[in-house]
Length: 233
Image 1 (cartoon, rainbow, N blue to C red):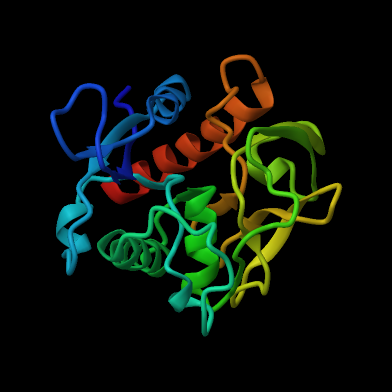
Image 2: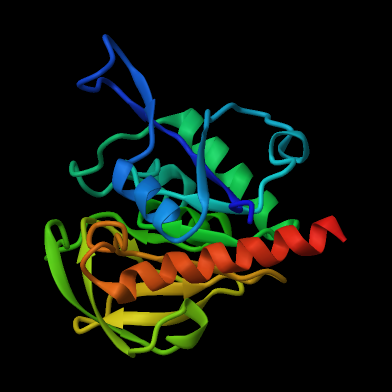
């Protein structure tokens, strides 16, 4: 059976251990998780004014990965912290464009960490620019209210986080489906005719040792496979 093709929007990197200069990267753990779940991960170069109908032809699911911070000008009147990092105008513009296209075209969508925040801002929401007690290098229990929809069999999962920002005001049509003990929004259901969810944590960090984290990717890839089958009819 052909593996569903999963588009992962690449992230700009100032340097990597295997390039002489700047790079376009996908976290290996993220690609490995998609492959382990039965999908074929493909990295796409962020290009402004892309024709997504053309570029996403043959793609069965879209994964918006983690990365640096969004420019606060997209959701706030001013910058309130010097903790903002990794801002890139092209990355922001392309992220917003692809997220909106995926929702409008009912493509299965999984948004991780920054990706989850991008969805929220794209739909008119705001972010906490810097959490007083950030979630960098934090593994904690997350309470899930739509476990089955995410492919989970448990309503509490141990999740690996790396973020210093969080959703503040919720974007249009989004539903909160998971929170941490401190009340931080940890997952959202995205308004789409397709399966579409965002998680604030990094399920790729421990998918190999935590079946619940792998299950999220398996559900996503399963939805992508169904989308592929429907498209071919």
